[in-house]
Length: 213
Image 1 (cartoon, rainbow, N blue to C red):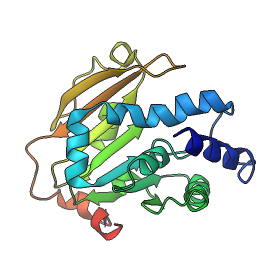
Image 2: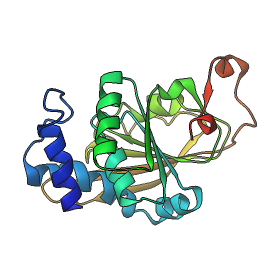
Image 3: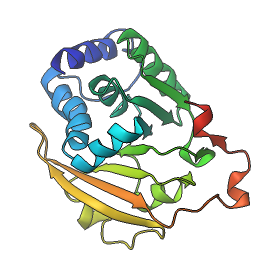
């Protein structure tokens, strides 16, 4: 992963120097806080690794500068890795990075999660993107899915005491030690009582994820 990390950071410092995709430009800090922090939480969860080996699809929401999407795509080349990002400038930049790093299992789209119907069984990741309840409410699906949140160690002090949105259950919480950081809290949620379809008002103009694969 260190070779990948070095090549990634070199692209950010050179070809994409004018685009603010990360504030972390020190090589070691970038490796720990962007690369390892993207991969270790997923690897530490036997549950998620088991599900990924069955489902073979990761959907990363709000990838920004490419995290955790690109490190996950590099680490797990047999998985299809899809990314949604609301800022088109970042989508184009990360698409260029995937080509320069020859990551053929990754596709990125200028989309918001609330505009897509998740009609295939996937594992969804959110890293440093919004509050848990708000993000879970934005998901439109008729499938059984797992949603992973990368949160700081003080999550339960800041937002974790709120009642969880209806239809979801926290099924795993795990503290992950990552060198050079204050640590990572990895949370996994699963929907229950999965509907056979979505409300009619939610179906209007929704793109199906299956059409993007």
